[in-house]
View 1 (cartoon, rainbow, N blue to C red):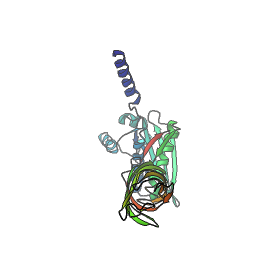
View 2 (view 1 turned 120 degrees about the vertical axis):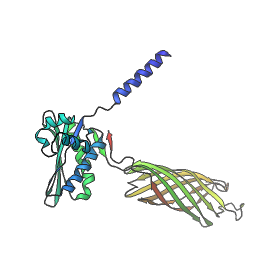
View 3 (view 1 turned 90 degrees about the vertical axis):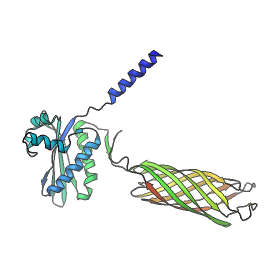
View 4 (view 1 turned 30 degrees about the vertical axis):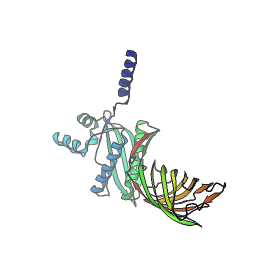
Length: 312
């Protein structure tokens, strides 16, 4: 028992050591504005700063702390590149990142440089043209990824802004065949990322359909889908997406349900068509078909994966 306890303690210690953060510190200086407003250059700088922070590759010095250190030492943020070793030592930063934001014809150009503070050498550089300010966020994602890959050799580093999270679905359904119709509800959950999601749903319908068995007279019966697997192809949160599903349930008049379905999402709204097949509903080995239309609302719980770093 003592040996096992020692092994557990040692493994825990190794885990803590191996996974503890030891990230290099970097100071991101204000981007230089050329042919654009200083406000736009400041916006680009701050978005880029957030991208670098989210990458979890560097320990980024906060802008406020940077400004305070500069004021305490009577230094201006401009001109820091001329003395990287001194500034790096003063800030306790191993790297400096400088950049520029300029207008070139009808395009906007962003350039960034990663500088080794000790040697003063540029060890990585990246640039990107941008159509307009509306595309800055996604463009800086690519720019940040390229800079980190080229500078630190992280060839398998990917920086994802794909939507990721959990959705909850609520829907109403309408079921019909030649013998009658009925209404019901659906509840489901789904989770995923980007263009692929999967989920689970349960559907209940209260119908006056008697099927092939009239023993229940005019009483309503319940058609229940205990569980359905839903596979969604496309960004269901932001764009169009295709839904394919298959479920199983029970016709409480005596049959087993198989429920294939097809549908589509458009942002928060989805529409689905299902054809429940009741196998042997009246004990004579027959199959009864229903047609079900379902319209629902998908409530997205949050972009949990927005700006997540992946090492593949």
